[in-house]
Length: 255
Image (tube, rainbow, N blue to C red; front, top):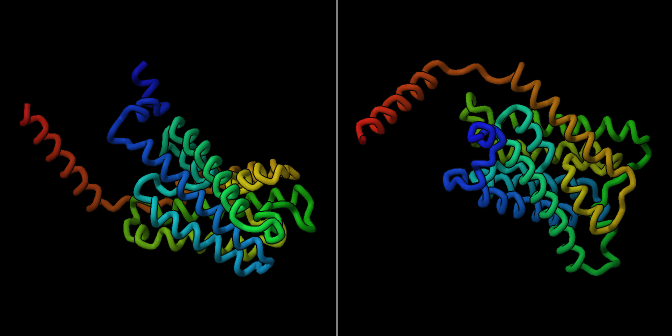
């Protein structure tokens, strides 16, 4: 039974070392500000402004909370981490729940703070000039490129890339918006779209904003871990094993 709980991640709920409750708060705060500032930029019709606003919001959020929760702020990223075994099932489910709640709260706060004549849809995403199948494909590749970037900059065998991870992820979001905001709204993030859909009660084509990015994220995560991941540095690995052995010896000596 204990092994089953460990595999699911139930043990994390009571573990002080895992800090899962801190992580859940961090995910809520991160996507709250993503929706608040990103959707605020959508009150204008300037696609460049929208693109950079979402990119900068993601950059800010990952910088601020990445050390606490990993800075997922996106169910597509969370599920990509889940299918590759980097996070537990329980953590993934809780992350997605708080991401959706944070997105709702962010859009709700924005709606309450600006006059209705400036809402302009509050960043609601829908298809423009493309068929649902085409929109699904666009959102698939948006999720794909985002999760591919996340895995690339967070590769434990590429420690130097972590210094630029928030910027790289933020710029990837900007890239996706610059390329596709005119067709699907460039969601890239099911929770971000869900938050606005709830507040506006607008669900047209909503399913594809979940299916597209999540399938893209799963594809990217599997491709990176199975084919593109950096080879292990033998020197770093040996140093890690030596440090681990030293810690174990000290632990045993303490008994």
